[in-house]
Structure formats: C-alpha cells, structure tokens
Amino acid sequence: MKDFEVKIVRLEPIRVVSFHAFSRSPELDGWEKMLEWAKPKGLLEDPLKHPVFGFNNPNPSPERSEYGYEYWVVVEPDFETNKEINVKDFPGGLYAVTRCIPKEDMESEFFKKEGYLETWKKLVDWVKFSKYKIGPPPMFEKHLDTNVPEDELVFDLYCPVKR
Image 1: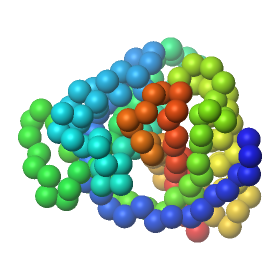
Image 2: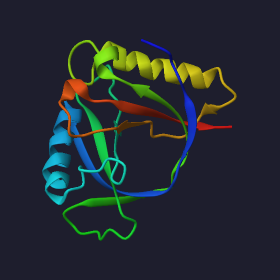
Image 3: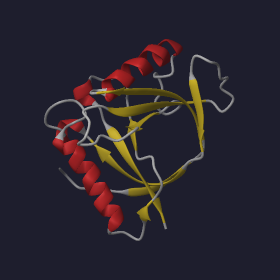
Image 4: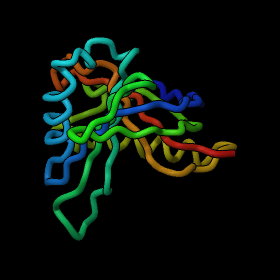
C-alpha cells in the first residue's frame, strides 16, 4: 500500500433510499437490489449528486455464516417516500476518511479481500492514536463510481469520530 492519508470530514445530513440484504454474500445481493431499482431512475449516473454508501448491518460474526449489508443511495431532500422503498434521513456526522483502491489493496474475492480489511484496520488504528475517538456507527464505504467493473471499484472508507 502506498501512502496512508486520512482526512477529517463532516458528512452533512442526507436523505437516502436503503437496500438491505442478509446472506452469505450480502454485499453482492444488496448491490443487485440497489442496481435494479436505482439504475433505471438514473441515480447512478452522477456519483457526486447521488453518492452510494454501504455498510455491514449486522456485522459478520464467527458464530454464523450469514450477515447483513446495507446500501444507501443519496436522493434529494424532497424525495417522495412510498411503500415499495425504504427512505431514511441520516443526520450526518464527523468522519475520518481514507481511500481504498482495490487494484492496489485487494487480492482475492470481492469485498472479502485482505487488503480491503487491512485498510479498514489501518483507519481504525489511525483514529485510536489520533486526538479523536471512534464515534457511533455506522462505518461507511462510499463508492466513488458505481459504473465500473468490480475489480476497478474505488472506495472512500468513513470511520465515525468524535472529539
């Protein structure tokens, strides 16, 4: 891994459409749900206008082979809710952020790669040894471009912090 850079950013309040999966491969299952709904609506064409965040929900554990993963697609504040979609308002917060580039950091299967997990570990360690403390969940992975093949995905990792 090259230089490890961290910046502190404030994530402003956002409105999101949520897609959740619970399985042995919830990142892929949730991704398919999110793509099926968001892509036809054009919500994945501009990652600056409609960023995509993802996080474990619930986290993996040694006691079970299944776990959860949730994707959020940011939508406009006045986005209408309906029964077929799950819309949430997230209050935002303070985050330590670093970049994770799969072609440099990842080694094997999608999202379970040692380099990816190592980047998360380095970010958490950075927070522990900084003037900040780990804040309340969730920890996010922000997808910088959803229109690339999986081996070209680039993420910003968001670790919640507090002073």
